[in-house]
Length: 166
Image 1 (cartoon, rainbow, N blue to C red):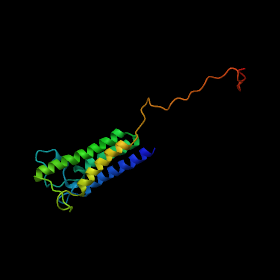
Image 2 (image 1 turned 135 degrees about the vertical axis):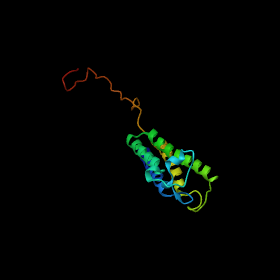
Image 3 (image 1 turned 90 degrees about the vertical axis):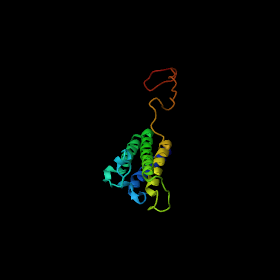
Image 4 (image 1 turned 180 degrees about the vertical axis):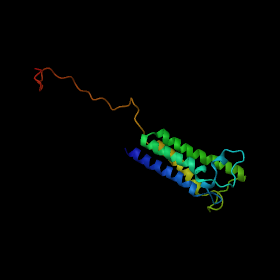
């Protein structure tokens, strides 16, 4: 019970961080919602062309949050872990593509220079989702049940309410 509660809180926190991350600066002050999702998988790489909200990094993170909610409702550790892998996967692909476009990645203390807090939120949210999948207890396997209680057969010498016995 406590493990499921703690795992659920962690999963919701990780999903929230992932969904919030596109609204924060990712690199050089540019928000994650301004990176086109298609740029991550195109030959041209990351461009300066702005994206619509549902054609940006926001879309896979919302999808991961919905998978997280389904995993919590179904008590499925696998779905919560899948959501974490999706968030981490898109974050890592984005890091690789921006690193290729820029030539290198810079980590700085200011959100307008180098990697920003949005990248950290996405990466941290993915890790928290994976941690939540480990903490969650999940469903019981169909064959896994409590120990059967031994009930001895009735003693024929002891009278019963129906008048049988002794």
